Length: 341
Ligand code: BGC
Image (cartoon, rainbow, N blue to C red; front, side, top):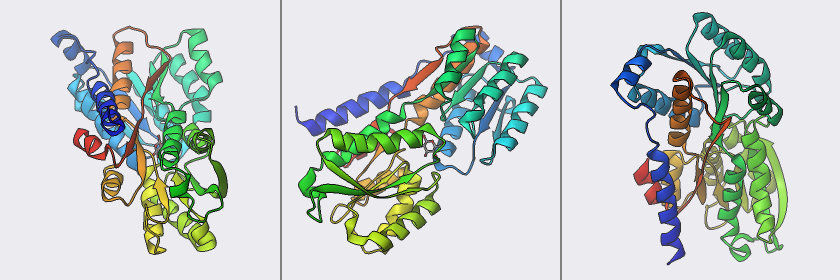
């Protein structure tokens, strides 16, 4: 079978499976129980493109499962841990039945967990994974605490593979035998940023390519920062840059504006990859103005988080780590991904 068709089928199958997560609710009695339950949701920052999609899906899915809209309170941490901690304290004081938390600073999770355990409120962390020592405590103490998310090593690897698959001849515009790249990182405290930065380059090396890092900057997941950083880098290093890796699509969209302003053309004299599969990024891939991205499945993650919360409310256990898969997106399968979103 042709590789292109196969990869489209695999992507479609993976997404189809992630979109058909079996509802936890078994009958109308369960639905009416959920209608009385209160859910506190803390998002690290509403002004994050990806978390906005995630938040909308989470709320819709909770309502579909039988929660009342009025009983779902969602707070904006405004990227400030002190603000978010106050919001968590208020949820605990209100006696919510379950908490779903996207931490501002994953290093604060031990304190957050302690508060929730003491209050007897089950807790589902999302999107920003706490460290191993923290996760080990949940297991050792058999606490009702879990993490739902995707393994960012996979997304970094897929980014690197998208570039490696082009082949050195296509990438090496300056003929120095290496892949000359710049890296635009998300929040360096976040493992998603750490792993994507590391594993994208590891995938190039694993494919036998020599790599040369020209610049590595922190764009904090933000489109405007991504734009400024890539504009500066292009002004400083110009044609030496062959590939722009961005830890997410928001920064890649900013990078694309900088690339175009600098008179460069993606696919002709530079390559650009992100992560998330934001709809604008998919349009760019279709138009050839972005090389690729990696679908960060906010459907599977939101459904997984809600299902885990419901299990706890029903007195059932969850694994302490609930993983979801990423899907590689290039010109070959972008139309399939668009059709599914
Ligand atoms: C997404 C980013 C987002 C971040 C927030 C990551 O998984 O790829 O777009 O900004 O999560 O924590």
